[in-house]
Length: 65
Image (cartoon, rainbow, N blue to C red; front, side, top):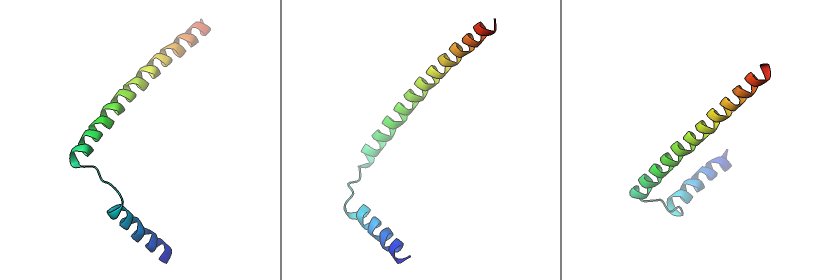
């Protein structure tokens, strides 16, 4: 248990002293960038899924006559 407490203390010390945190403006712009790319990728995946679904549906209708 003492090792775990030491690990937590060292982790907080590392975060406090050695991590370079972004400014508020940088954090906001990066958050917007991630949101935009997430929307673009989700729309792309939705589009591919829709097309694939139509192709598979057509294939099974064609096979069953």
